[in-house]
Image 1 (cartoon, rainbow, N blue to C red):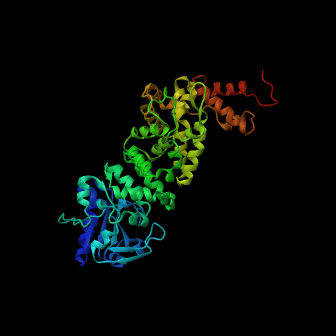
Image 2: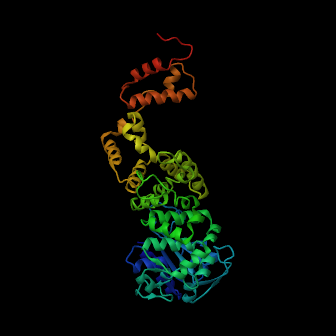
Image 3: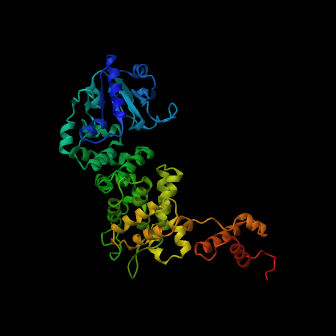
Length: 457
């Protein structure tokens, strides 16, 4: 258990004459009777001393006083350093310090090590993250009023909020995330500073922004988080295309809930918890193409081509936020296919089966269900899809091909674009039950796709 390992590090450091405590988010979570996802230790020992005392360590940020100590049970067969990037398998040990200057809005210009835990706590972000805990005695050391803010449900910076946010601009997004996750209020002065400095979030790396937004989207309180992002002024800087959804009307007969932004946030409320990251982003961006395609036609409001436009916009957003290729592919598939559910009852059997076997189709179904619940609330199509998925056995959904490319070459066809056309036609006929054997499939190819220059009888 990682808590026991962190406690053993504290005890080992103390045996060597150093101060050491659990600190930060793990203390907050323990006080809330939540299971921490990671553990941090703060100590008066400098990095070199920590590395001498704890034999296996990684100086991931030694210049800032940070050393990572991997847990000994991080996995059978794991290699040294294999899990270092994951704090769920290691304890971060940081030297008490004070930070001097933040020219880049992220890293301190100068770090001064200290022997006073009060100095260390004073540099941290929020009061609820600024408490120390003796894991042996259970005593909590609170120099910043964190326990009271926990009781009252308040997110408050330690010290001057503008200074805290100027030091590290990402703290503004973290304030939103914590407020949403714990359903807390952001203290007024803290929120005013966020509104004043919102535009400065643009200096933060897109990867760090992506990771904070992903946590907001997947922790179960995404709607509240995005309302706070909007109210704080951060949304228009981190995701301007989502901010543009505000005020974009929709046809009331299909969307009685309101505009595109309202619909999207209601949809986020209906996502599963926990929620896969790609599903959450696909849900957030599923209607991103509506604002630029909005028009009022004689019969009703229309968004002609919003899916195709949305896929292109979503791809740009994913590339900008540095998603992996696989993540981007799935997010774009969710955006690109979300309107196809309206056609499932009219699809040919082959088309339906190909649709139902899309990769990670559970995410497509979850998005459709949430989309319905956030608008007309009619789940008949969702029920139809789930019934078909139950009725159609895997071997009928994805049968072994009756004809291969080698068969086409043997029949006299030359490799080229027509190969795919022929193989697709054979697969469609097979999925629809019109072809059941290799012989009938080859006969179908000879009849429907004669080799050029070869007469057929």
